[in-house]
Image (cartoon, rainbow, N blue to C red; front, side, top):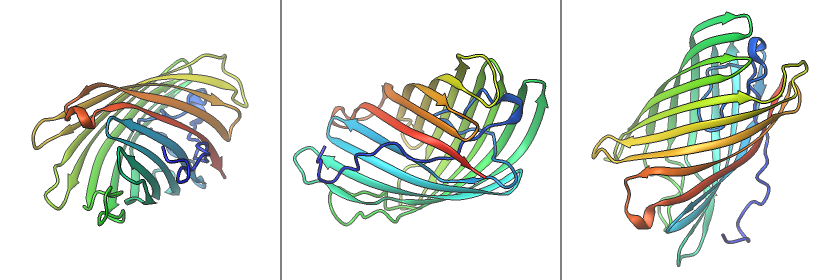
Length: 262
């Protein structure tokens, strides 16, 4: 990577999403969570993501701001900073495609030490990233993503599932996104929470036009340091990737923090 253009700090600030019935579990690292913030919950999310491919290295630093309108309805936006370093070309740094999103809780059933919840999420991506120079740092297209997220979370484990469809403009292919995550807390339950969570996730993307599929296995670990602070890191490794050899992924690495702001 070109050190002159890389943002070295990867640790950032993000929202910590806890439910009172199962606060030993933080949200998955790469999969969406169905747990919403409280009525007056708000936060800032940022994390560093390093993507190593055969033909390019990419560093991304998204900054997201979610805000709850009601306990069931959340809105927010995300602004990514992107640095691309293609093999044999100069690096490019700038603003990527800006996103606005909204979530709405469809179902919630709580029990003693457990909860099952489902929400829908709608995301609109705007082509704000520069595409006039090589390498481009944006898609050059509007994207509308509609998804369904569910999770069953207990004091002993958490199971999460997400499926979403991405409608893309300008003749670019649509995508079917599918994610599954399993979380396991290592320490006894206590309050305020002090916990280490292990996650194993599978994150997939199917290009609907030609059936090309990518599937990553994504292990990760979280440390919950209190009711407001969470540290996490994870790596994504390709299991299936139907792309030319020059475009294949070596790995993707993420490191960040989550902070809940009341």
